[in-house]
Length: 170
Image 1 (cartoon, rainbow, N blue to C red):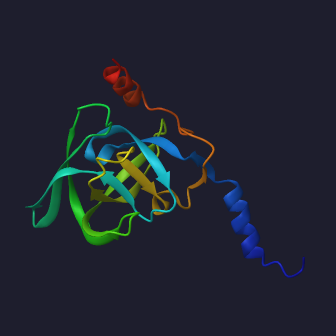
Image 2 (image 1 turned 180 degrees about the vertical axis):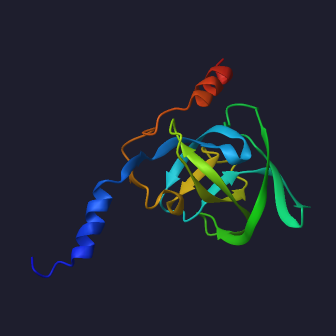
Image 3 (image 1 turned 180 degrees about the horizontal axis):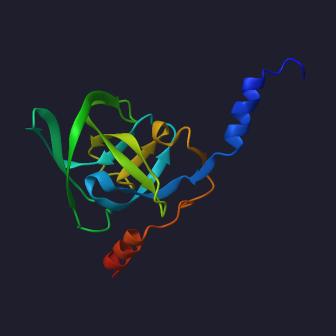
């Protein structure tokens, strides 16, 4: 036991105190006006991805911006018009290995019923054929959370999600 490096022990202690997420969660994106959206927590994806339609770049005050439409719940026709400054344009490979250029935005994210928010990078992509409108990638959750793939909605359900669920029920 004498060969254990004390800094590694501190890292293990810190990890033991990390909060846990499930494989799917509710989040809000207050910076772009999204009160609630179900996400798949995907540690295989480096960057988070958001289902965006009608992506339109434009300039505001000398900066590159992007406007787009977001349908947070694929079971509903409700769409949100969003705008955000562009922080980057990156070539991203999807799970099938296909590369495409995507706009990158940075916006705060809030987990479930929590009032705490932190900034994350999100790429804008067509995810209309996917079950989840958003992937929460590993850079968004590390080092704040550990992921337990046997659990779901650990962060709770925001009130806005409850209203959305009631609105889309038959």
